[in-house]
Amino acid sequence: MRYSKTQSFALVILRISIGWHFLYEGGVKVLNPHWTSKSYLLDSGGFLKGFFEQIAGNQTVLTFSDYANAYGLTLIGLSLVIGVFTRYASIAGMVLLLLYYLSHPAFPGIEYLFPSDGSYFIINKTLVELFSLMVIYAFPTSNIFGLQRLLKSDKSFLE
Image 1 (cartoon, rainbow, N blue to C red):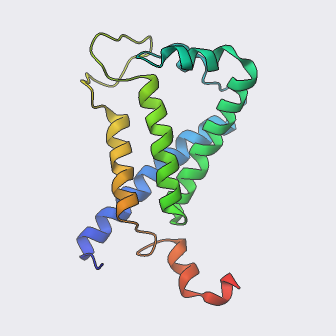
Image 2: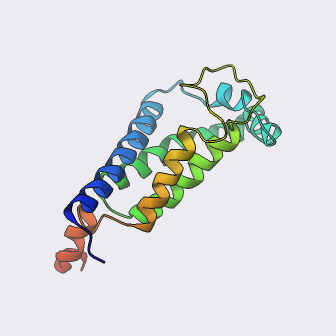
């Protein structure tokens, strides 16, 4: 399917912007040896509060979760920014964002220790970014602009 230049530009910018957000958030966590998600998990709300508190309460599971989160964010972000394996990165990003949302849902009556960036009712920034990744999955742009386009055009590189 052919997109107009405006459509292509908008989709590529959306992909790179989300990728940058993931890459930055992951990089900050990877580079900080003291970072942990423990306090975030203990602040969970909603119907899965107990699940996230169990993760925070088990040091082995928490350590695995922290590494998976930090390096997952980084790799997803890098993939989206450079434009390779973007559909896989979109799926992985949606899974992470869904977990973040389920940990801190924007439901009425739930109060969190950490302040949010506004008042939300069910839909928050996390869900908007998740839905944006659905768009990136549905309209892959790495063949328009990205490393994947270069890899496909240079068959000798793949052999």
